Length: 76
Image (cartoon, rainbow, N blue to C red):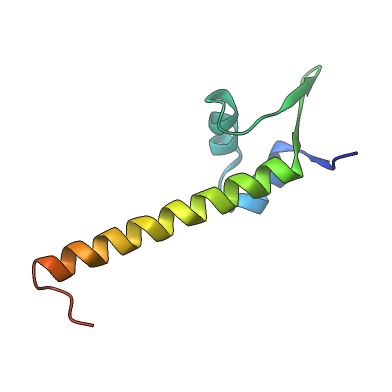
């Protein structure tokens, strides 16, 4: 059985606000279930989303460094 977390706990894990997590849920970026008014998210899904975001951030940083190198602003 997977461990489920609240929206607040997901926000703490991701290091963002509770409303931002709700936005991610509404956009379908993280799967969740509802039990009445309560939202539950599998901790595995939260951690997978966090890992995916870190990969994207790293790619963007590399792209910026490559661009800076191309225009002569970055000299390793």
